[in-house]
Length: 330
Image (cartoon, rainbow, N blue to C red; front, side):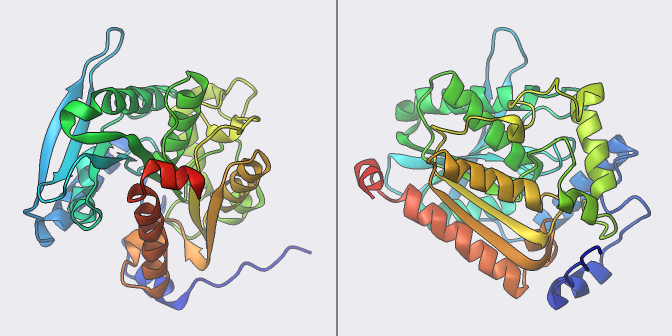
């Protein structure tokens, strides 16, 4: 007998009622160009309603490569914080097919000011124009450049963490695998917010979440088809294209994972956390009851969203503000 699905949290349900959800969900991937335009317009509209953080500067950097296009990075840094600054290498959400680095600047700037850290938001290439692992290669290039040039930039090369939301969380995870396998310096941590990790769509939650309208099974299948083409769900997929494909997770950085109970990514996130732990990686895991995908963005004033924000903010404070020797000894 199939289990009944838990109810959506009441505050999140009220927010859901107010959303413009069409027949293909709020993110219609049957028309990616149009949905990209809509996402950009929404992000710019939201940014226009938020006060700017005058103590944080924004500077766009283009990291050159010999064999591929430059990687744009939006570098945010607080003017008043004493250096060298810790750095968060950030990957925006959008299912790896939507979004852009500057969309998160309105809330990343206050984060910089509050934590006294820099944020390097990576404008990675999107699918289907750039199939995987192009985005993870962009992430690796950005991480190496930030690490290699940290001293000249007034940043601390020993305190560089990775973080990302949804599709960007998946890219952060794949980037961490590339960093490990190519022998670069291990990041301080990877902070993964409801990350998109598994192209196979075989978990219970991937079959269960079909009709909420945020990022349901049908949307996820279309996204992975854009990212991988005919390779999606086959054996012809590497961990740098879908991080859940990695069988050896040893040597990865300490990891934070937060996900909602009613998120299509729930079970792939729980599985990744368990396997990281089994390979000796310190893991902090948060599962939010009655919460759908990206609940903190769609219902930011809800109790669950505030709890989630507190959890990952606290994680950043504990990891970014500790001296490396203290962190290693803890």
